[in-house]
Length: 111
Length: 121
Image 1 (cartoon, chains in turn purple, yellow):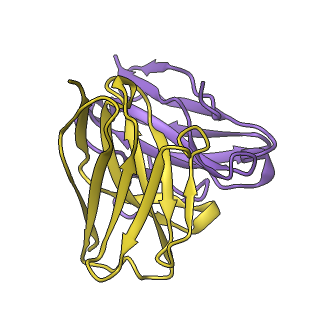
Image 2: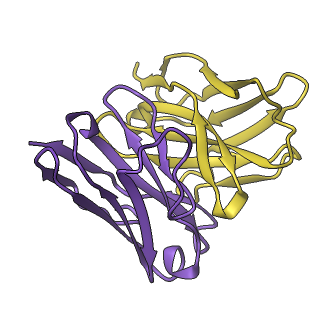
């Protein structure tokens, strides 16, 4: 059971917009700790997609955006492309655990 | 450009100690702006943070693994290491090392390519 809760899977057709939620609690996201998002393509290491809730590293398309409100955060992907099919993870810090935590991951399928 | 590379045995026997090293190139583990971390991913499952270390040697461990984990740093070799004792099949996973930006608000970037460690007799 992950400290941060994500839907196991989401799907969308090419060109559509999908969102992936990340629900935490008052000891992590709700405590003001930043949320970060990673994309993991099959057989590869995770790659940062969004850091500090809303910021994109250099090279990440602006089709990817992040938001945070209360005890939750969301990753939005617009203009879906086949190459976006991957696993996506949120990550934050938890003060009760005194450590960094990940969501369980969401598998994105592009139909 | 900082790069990280994990190294160590790919097969460990049950009850023994798993030992991995992460070698950092293109940057220094002594850089005070960063922490360094270990994350693992069992086959077909999600990511689990194992622990993190600062160049001073200050460590942070996942409470669920704390009794079995030791992370250390060797600034002279620009490396940091992971030891996980009393392993079982449940410790079979791809183990990643990564640089941690920003301490408690931080994110992991870059990551090593990962190394699969199988626990089996």
